[in-house]
Length: 252
Image 1 (cartoon, rainbow, N blue to C red):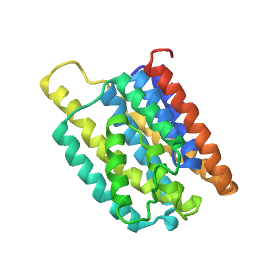
Image 2: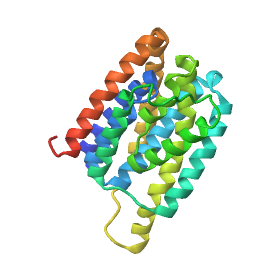
Image 3: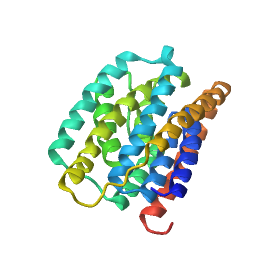
Image 4: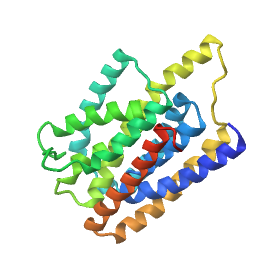
């Protein structure tokens, strides 16, 4: 990784952590897009997983009193089922497919709510969310908009939504790191082309930057209303998705 690439990624980590600190999502979409443009897919997935796991973990810590642990436990069951299936299939997408998955994921926020009657608190839906979100997060790197669909109709307030989504995403990114680390370990063991991996100082800077961005994003979240929160999140994710679609088509 060149110093310029590292600097671009570090700035992106700070900005996207701030965005995710507000909305509990969207920042991961941007970060994944930048990483996929600068690093091989497998490396990008692992780096994204590490940074996002720290960011979400810190956000979950900040809002820990609002976490719904019953939802998390049910979500974890579906997540583990998805991981087992993906290990059997063993398919890993290339860069263009990742951009397309990111674009399609972001557009999920525009699905008419009448088409899907989803509520993370209802029976069986946390498990369904865990399965679907884990599968998409592992293959595409990000699944925030899909996860959000399960929270839109819930009576939980914005802080409970952000906190519970954060702890579920810690698990999602941990599984993703394990899934994408396998080809990197295999490549290193086979003595093939050297694995492109950021230096340790990159992570030493990325982790505190992620925490700083998350902290300031959380302060802005406190000042927002639930209505403004959901409206701004929808349009932001749409703009990101449009950019990812252009990237998948080779126009960016």
